[in-house]
Length: 224
Image (cartoon, rainbow, N blue to C red; front, top):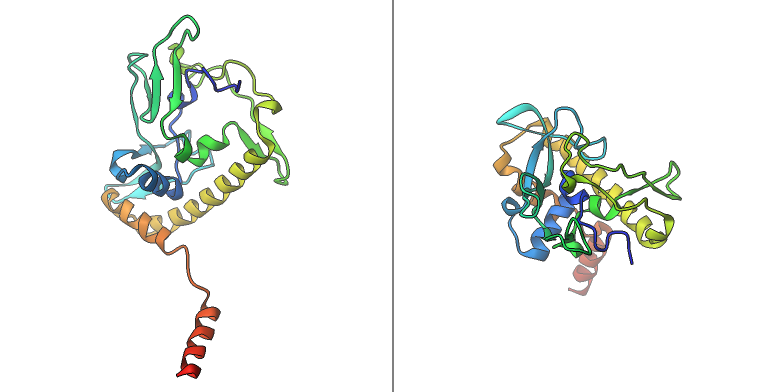
């Protein structure tokens, strides 16, 4: 049984989940949701959300404020006074699960940051490293909702093929998102325009081979 099976999902309660544009568009497509139903911007003055992983965006209404694009959170029904990822499906505590259980409601479409947790590449990107997970996600909050993994992770908990693939995709997509942020931040627009900008950029990410097009056009002219 995996380490996450039967857990109350403290990670999905403790952290704002940074997204990439690809994460956002995948959730829209797979779940039939609109951007405004699940995405939000989190103020991040101290960089504690971005953690040098996600880019900061600036917007016309507050141009000096750094924001990170994340999944929305909602109040927990099991732990009053706490919050959780809006996609986390929670069940109440019982004798087998003293803190209840939590299951991702969009597991197949979850963001890259969730897929990669708690791993990273080594400096040469040929080894997957398991991060040490702290005991609590919010050290200053004593609510049991914010306790993290029930035991330390081991290499047996991590699929050596899937983990490397997830990390490679996460790194590529976040780097692309950082490039997109640089472009956006040159002339910050209103927050309401961000989804349109996002779709426009990603729709232009696939192009036809110009050489092939030229050869095809030449062939058509010759045939004519």
